[in-house]
Length: 302
Image (cartoon, rainbow, N blue to C red; front, side):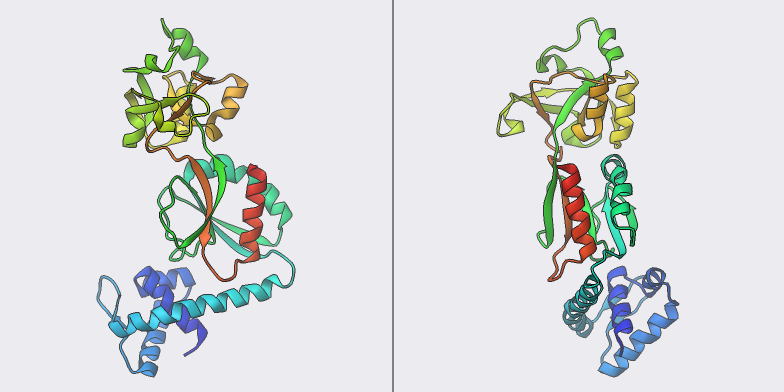
């Protein structure tokens, strides 16, 4: 058995099939099948229960892979450490970012980051789903909200504040524009589809320790969307007020395109993420490319 065959084996386990692993590794599926068969012959045990639908590890296979995976991670760390010893940030950095936050806050910073590290190639995966960093070979991800995977290293990137905003045109069209949070009760709004966003907003005074400790105001979801960018466009177009994060609309407020209806209040929804995080798999060795990206982004956002 050789190192490449062992890596092929773990990718087949993570992807669930020889074909999927072969696509990622850019090799022929039959090569992986032969390599696994050779490993089984060397070990004298069957590693997989093969079916037309999905691979499944045998008990012996699970025991083998559980011991093999950390050894391969250690070797990959050693290999990366040798590369980093050259003093240059290089290789491929695979990033996972959400669609809206990634487009608005991460992508605009990438040209400067690339100029600082010209030998580093970037591979961005845009997804609003929680991606398995190990299975998808993600080096570092930007995530919003509560983190549930304790096996990841998480560093705070940005504190998020929410604002109720509307266009000047919409405000002028109202006989009685909202003056206090209670005026929003029953008002048709542009909202995210998440249950905690679309019908109940929390208003608290500045300095409150808990955004949800103030007054709850029930709003009417006149327009429901899953995209923050789309909600912003509708608010700019005068369709109504919307609860949006500051990182998405602060420039619009500064330019007068949108108006913060309640600048003296903290506003939140129960499903609203309050932080953006940089997360990466916990390893004994953190590659220089990951450290470079984390340090750059934290400095840029600061």
